[in-house]
Length: 169
Image (cartoon, rainbow, N blue to C red):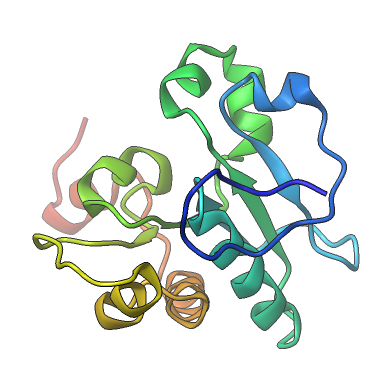
């Protein structure tokens, strides 16, 4: 049994076998879709928010949506890994949602413009974590909603601006 963090916050205990080598790489696939299908969306969490990603995965699975959960204990260390590892964890072309009790801007480099961040874009408050997460909407339900929304948004091709403006390369 592992716990996603040493946080004093209530966290969901995860009964998973994870290789320490994967953890040392800064980011790794914590959970794939139970039915073995390729992920339609990736949920990213660190620390105590990882359990929210796992809970959101269960919500979405009940709706037939295949979800990969990525735990990212160290974004810096993941950034040092070979691109092949980074791409294996966060595949190109798969929409992503980060669930993290921090400012959303940081997570844009991982979720891209097509993704979403369930985060905290204002100054915090003082209260028990459970109350703050509910108050700020950092919940499994919000993660599931964000995943549904990014799946429904149209894919923007890299040259969409050129096509829209009639510009040529």
